[in-house]
Image (cartoon, rainbow, N blue to C red; front, top):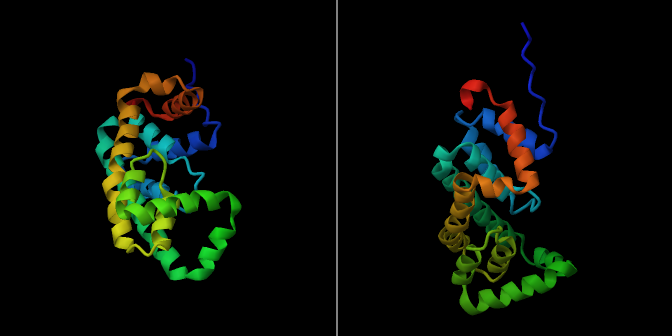
Length: 197
């Protein structure tokens, strides 16, 4: 009788993190832990938030709505805390941000847009697939109330996050065309116990 071979651990960091989250998907702390990713996306822009949402939605299609709501809540909370931090830090932060040459042109462009259209510009920018971190900073520097910034992000973020989750659940064939996503999902699926598949 042949012994069962233990599945090999995922080789990528994203695969290992997704595999841990997949194993913990039905625990109470799962959604708050996942919500830390969009929250932290305002501070650490290299977090793979959209990739994580698409992967989790592909692995757990029945929890798609809860995942989207968690990502929206994390993004709104991140925008609020970023606006509060920028407004409470005062002029020295403005000088620091203006000293960063690559961000300067982008910040000025968003600042002009925010000055012309206010928080509605932020709501429109929140419809884009990526986190509107520079627009949130521009709103905070323009003196827009953090609650208004959070509301503007709440208006805009559900649309792109829902589309990302739908792509994960409804179009796994399209996602699997990406070698990176296919490799990560295959590694995670190999880690699942037979009763979880």
